[in-house]
Image (cartoon, rainbow, N blue to C red):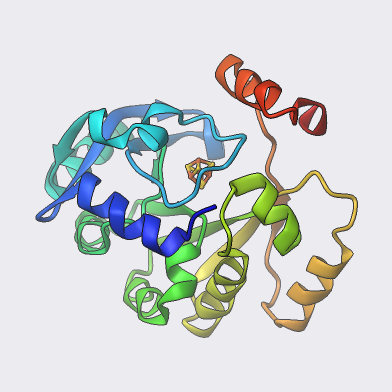
Length: 233
Ligand code: SF4
């Protein structure tokens, strides 16, 4: 088992150079009704259901470095060409490489909404990260919780800790008055304790969505090897 904070630091050493970060693809996608997407490399979790594969598990050998300017230009070009109003970073964990992300956010024009899809680990670990993000009015954060309990988090991610950071991220975003919503990956029937906890956190009216796991062949193979495929069917 690993510590996601230590893994964040190790991953950052691989995927961030100065203020440039590794990305492996820029593309238009149909999510959120159409969004310009940059797929980044590296993550601080190892979810058993992750579709990203090489970009997460083999970051040293994946792809090239891009400056924030290059990423912003690519995202904006796709958005304007396709008439999208939204941009995002997907593929890996966008909060790894804080200076790069903040620089990128500064370069996204106000008329484009930046959807930050994150596992929330680093936003929960360091409150000042959420404070930095609060400066951007065209930002929406989507925090994807990996499991409804610490035990499920450990099973789904293989990490020894981090569930509390995910929940702390929600409090930090609430305190900084940042728009956010929660996505939940859970195969457990015991979700009520999580929902009670979210209610106690007084997060306001936030959307909670079920994150659907797509069983791509590589995901299916991994789950099969781990004897966990039936959980996700
Ligand atoms: S947090 Fe997302 S990118 Fe990272 S391992 Fe989990 S599913 Fe993959």
